[in-house]
Image (cartoon, rainbow, N blue to C red):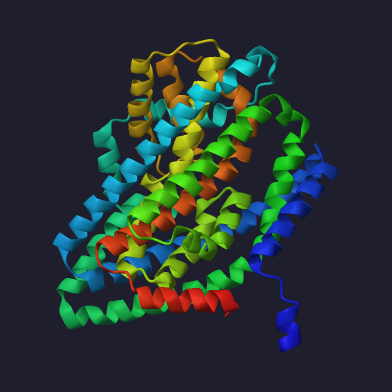
Length: 426
């Protein structure tokens, strides 16, 4: 047994090995459509398996958590507090992105007309609908007319809305509701077990997804936009390791310890460019780390819609990058308008494929950037998406602990025991 443990490679290292192999395979099979299609199919199968387990975990954990909470006033307080925190953090991320773009001026160093454009037709329809959707249409879309239809489409907000009311209803019928609580607790435990099985295939899925990215783009296409990519990643790193660390310190959260606990999930989110890939394990780990089930199961799924710090940084940086590339000098008033537009538009993009890019399409016209400009950065969107997805995952884990502490629903003894067991590799 001791020898087996010695040679065991952690999931994080397996994913990194998959990442390296994917880069090699992508370079070997560069522009090889048959090989790229095979890798694409394998990667899609992995993401589909993750999506298969996400909704059962969210519904079971959220319903049980709300049922145990059983207080609609407390739930309303937690919900309001969570949304205010999300809004402050995403607004801060947008402002930081704009400040960095103004200081570094990445768009002035390239000739926009020398860049090769990519097809963005898949995003334009979503962007047009986003422009015409107001706050009322967003609010109305949260309430499901048919919860099973929402489940089929994977619409997270209507599912959260239904689960909250189902949990409150379960709590209101007392002992009769305990049958539902026990059943959904069992469902959650089963799905966490399935998650562990699915995660064993993560290195293969990562290898395939990275292979597709490199195989389609190659490294040559990155050179003209390399400065923008570096600035984007540096800004996101600053936001995580400085801004989030300071926010964590303010709320007495051991940020770097928390980051160490979720590093595998951050790596998985980065390599797959999918927040959903990390969601099941995030829900499980945040409960083990000390946050109550009700807080975890409400904050994390909601955060995947409203707390997209990495996406906010990218959107503000990219908008100003394109404006600079087209020699469009934005006044302070125009930049403030951009902040407000991004704040509003990003909230209406929940569940939209390529949401960050769609938000850009829906907003850049307000600052005079031609729609064609987006085609020049579409090619690197997947590469930057990896970074912003990782930032989103870190932001949601921090939010969960902060909200739990603010509600006095964080068990520090549980945290210490879990951290000790995690260090031992139990």
